[in-house]
Every structure is written in C-alpha cells, then in structure tokens.
Length: 93
Image (cartoon, rainbow, N blue to C red):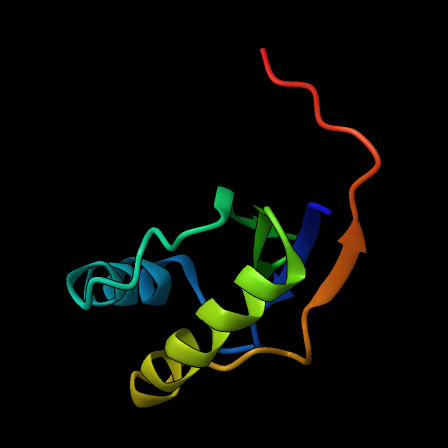
C-alpha cells in the first residue's frame, strides 16, 4: 500500500540548507531511493517541509535507515517524527 510522508523541519531548517544537503545525499548513491514516487520540498508558514509518496512503509523505513545518519552529520533536524498516511487514490496526468 502506498503512503504519503510529511516532514517538518526544525526551526533552523531552510531552503538554503536543503539545497546544501541534497547534493550530498545524491552523491552518496542514496537518492532517489527505490520506492520513492514523488519528493516535494517547500516552505509553508515560515516552516520548511518535505512531502513524499512511497510505494510502501517498508521501502520508506529502509531508506530512512540510510538517510538519517547523513542528515544528522550535516545538522539537519526535524521538528518531530514524520506524519505517515495511507493513500486511498493517486491520479497522475
């Protein structure tokens, strides 16, 4: 079952920090990971956020095991655990 995952950055997270760390993740060979359909990064109400659509909870969790050490090493913090929702339907154009 596909899922939507929503991350909220800690107060110090910014688009600039995202732009700094994303190439490091890509160069590690970890991105884009198997099972990731969509990755969207944006600011909302002064908070930096990322939303993703994954093929399954298992693929999301497997990637998280590889991703979180990279984020921690580069000072990226989240405001809390991600929100995870089961997807009822996806329509693509």
